[in-house]
Each structure stands twice: as structure tokens, then as C-alpha cells.
Length: 279
Length: 279
Image (cartoon, rainbow over all chains, first blue to last red; front, side, top):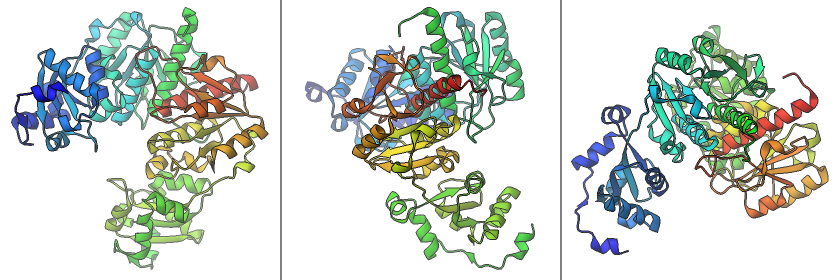
């Protein structure tokens, strides 16, 4: 590891170093909103970010914890790109990490928001609209499935849900770097949907149509409701089609990420059959 | 609330009371295994347990936290049934709770295991076999979806996965009380599957068949792999059919509970179409 011997930069060993304090602040949503930044941890996530040409504002690393060569390559890549690269002590990294066993590398990344006006749903399989997602893990899992089926991304209506919560980022398993995110309000969203002539499909256990008997051809926006209460009456009224996932047991609801996954795979199935695509 | 004035029993106010210490011990898997007990929290879960005729070994309640009448009805029901009912202080309940905001009621419940020899897969839509589930939340979510589609329950192979982990119980949203659970070993499982002539279906991203193009008629056991590495080569070799969920993005895997949900809904879809059932 030549890089070890070649390094000349100072090592940050204080948890109270101003840069470290600023990064630690990003654990709070308010600070993420203010700065437009968020953090990612671990070799896999950082490799995925770089693979998607996401610039790292700052990369932090701990040589003694960086046991695998991929991690070292990421440090080198960041240095080559002229990006900020800070060596820190294990204690400093621990003070920033939400993992019990950090992998010796983490990074600060700029949030990237697309504008609703630039979204053309006819170009994509589908988009997912969400207003309130209580569990950031569910949100991240939805992003992960969205990427897997080739959907475009997430339209967040209102500001109840934080797409850059560390638990959401982690559950997305890196898929968030290739998905697009849009923030909007309900009136703007409805105006946009009208102009783009795309179908807004919502789910509710009381809908009369079963999800796989309904036409889910693109362009399509899938509108998924809050974990606790699903889509409100107003949200349901805004949908062009309401469908239900049959529930034959005693349950009256599914996990939100599971319900979204079943819907997204049905969208993929119908659209692939249409395109006669070999998947 | 007449019950408030009618109570004469002593109130347990010490976290170190022997009964409370024994219940707190159930936070450890080893103690759950040894005793065959586990704990549930909150009005919803306890109502569901009683609704499924699951006897509560002990019910704990805190009058000042029991703000809704359903909670009081559960206490009365337990008393009427002659079950143990202990009033405790808020501090004692907090010391047992995994929720920041406990609802004033929790209970100790006996684990219920079915015997593999008694399982007749031809009577059910399907069973789910699991060997290693890393996240108890994923396990509970799988149980919840299994109940929703009308599947029978979970066959746990080996002892890597704890079905009664509090996070699994919570994620099941009460579905675990109407699902059956079986513990077995891989050789016993394979012998049973052979004798019962049911189809063992596994998933892998490298399988050549797409999940919805394969016959998923009952009797069926769905074999889902570990979050990290999926089904091992040996596990895949034991399957009668291997299918894949198409992934058109950069992802090489899905969340385990999402993948299981998509599979279970396809099983339900195919079998309902067969039965021409109106769902």
C-alpha cells in the first residue's frame, strides 16, 4: 500500500475539529436541509456513488480500518479527482458513524434534486409519488426496488419525508445514486400530472379493482400512502385508478415497501410483456 | 372505569421484582428458547393474540398509561379468563419495553410450534422455508405478507433465525398469531418435501426462468435465501424450480421481504386464477 507511506497530510484526531463537527451535524435533518449535503458510509456505498459519477464533497478514511483494497482505491480515486480527502482516527470516524463496526471510510455528498418541470414520465417505466413515509427504512427499500425494476425515481409531495435520512440511504443499498428525486407540492404535482397525461395509480384495500387486472402501462405514477392510514380521501380522489392488493387473511394492510414492491413488479411485468422484451 | 376502583391487587413497583426480572430476561433469545415464552407489547398485539385464542401467560398493565377503552377491555378479559394480571408502575413497564412510548399494556405469551410431520402442504396455498434471516424485521414482514396472501406459515431450517425476536414480532403486526411455525433440519425438511410431493421453489438472480412464467400451483414451498448471499449452491440444488425476479437496473438484489412479497403475490395470483376465485 504505497499510499500509506506517501501520505503527508495531517491526521484529524479531535472529535471537535470544526470540519468533523459540521459533518456530525448532518445527522440532523435540519442541517442536511440547510446545507444540501448528506453522508454515506462504507466501501459499497462510496463505490456506488463514484460509479454513478456522484462527486464526494469530502472523503474521510481511517487507514487501520481500511482492510480491503477497494477502499484504498476509492481514496486514491478521490485524491486523483482533486477532491477533499481527510485521514481521521478511528475515534473520530466512530463519532460520525451510525454503524457499530464502521468500514474505515465515509463521505459527504451533495443532495441532488431534479425539477418536476423537467420530468417527462413518457420516457420512463414509472415514477413513485409519496407524501408521508414514516419509516426511513421503508423509503430506502422503495428506492432500492424502484431501481431494480427500472423505474425513474421518487416524487416527494410536501416535506414530511426526508429522502436523505441515514436509514433511508442505507436501506437503498446505493440505488439512490441512480434514482431521481423530486420535491413538490400537491397542487403542483396535480397540475404536472394533468399536463403530462400520465396515469396516477393509487392503492387501497377497499378499491374494487385487483392490481393485476388493471392496465399499468407507462406513463404512470404510482401513488403510495402513509404506513398508518394509506392514501387519504383527497389523495385517492386525485388518482385516475385505485387498485387493491388482495388480502385473504385477517390482515388489513401490508408493509409499505412490500406493497410498493408488488405493485412495481406488476408494472414491470405488464410493460415487459407489452414490449415483448426478453428480461 | 369501574375496574380502577375495584382492583385490590398489589402494584409491582420494583424493577427487581423476581417476576419482572424473569420477564425482562425474555429480551434474550437464550431465555426465550429455554422458557418457550416471548413478550408482546401494546393494545393491538394483545387484542390480536386474544382474537386468535392465544392464552396470555401474564398480562402487565399500567392504569395511568391505558388511555383507551380497548386496553381496559383486554385487562378485564384476561381477569375473566382467570389469567395472571399484574398492575405495575410506569417505571417497571418502561424497564421491559422496547418502545419509547409504551401503551400501558404488555404480555408474556407461550411460543407455539407445529410439527413438520403434521404439516400437509396440499391443504394450504403455500409455506415459506427460511434458513438464515439476518434482520428480524424482515422475518416479521415476511410473516405479515404470508398471512395477507393466505399462506400457511414459516418452516425454519436450522436455528440461525429467531422467530420470536421482539423486532420480528413487531414487524409481523400480529400476523404471527394466525401463522404456523415449524422448526426442522435440512435433511428432515428434504425428506418431508419428498414424501409430500410438494414443489420447492427457490429464487436467484441467475435463474433462467422468470418468476411469473413458472407454474406456482399449490402444494408449494417457497425457499428464500439469506439477505447477504441468497440461497447457497446446496440449497439451490435442493429446489425443484429456481426462478428469478428480473432486475433491469444496476441492483443485483432486492430486500428479502420485498422479494418474498412479490413471490407470494404471484403464488396468490396464479392460484386464484386457477380457482377462479373472486378476490
